[in-house]
Length: 344
Figure (cartoon, rainbow, N blue to C red):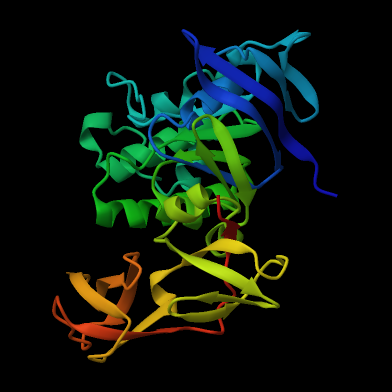
């Protein structure tokens, strides 16, 4: 049975009367990746700092491998928590070469062998004597990972480590880093505001909003079965239209869909629509009007106004050409089970 590497229970933290983390509880099993996703100011970095020991919680407890490290009756300082951290700017020592950066803090008799192991793990075998300014952004990233892994931490924390890389390099580096950390069997908590990164890196994704953890689940569940309207709209593209339940279906102004969750018949709901569920066809008598579109290479993302005034989006192949003002008939993919939330 896999044991818990990390358990946070009822964590809370405020700064000058403003709540940054509100009653957050989450478990992370050994060797697993938890991606913490949310907008700026949602509390995800504060949660990371609480786990690292850089902040003290106002309430709640933190356990690492079953040992309390923070709480009303416990406090273990950061340097004794066996937690590694990689900062946004990597924080490499500019006056030290790669080998000395990785060896920093290691016992002298073990340092040389461990540095060699880490350089091999991150694919930088010939870089021991390079200085940080001689490395690319991706190489600096790997050195920072190697330094964090060198003491064999029980938990590794990554604070938006790819944010300074350009888009193409970011995609390649994150794939490499995930392979490295999987090979090392690391337990990782990864903070990001990039939904694509979170879905790629995380075995589970925790979505934070205003200091609260709104949902923790597998990436596929976060996307297809969001627990709240915020999660639905923050992860992927989501529009909402009014609907009413009828048996196992939900009825809307543009068609019906099977329900994913049970509601009493006649319940007024808000129905989530992803753009890939909405098909368009030119029709002068159609229920929608194209008000704009965004070219995305293979696809256009169409913005469509319905008769009720509601706006929805539809993803269509680039050979479907519907200029603004075109009336369109709208068809919903009935193989898709609708996620609905009660109307208020």
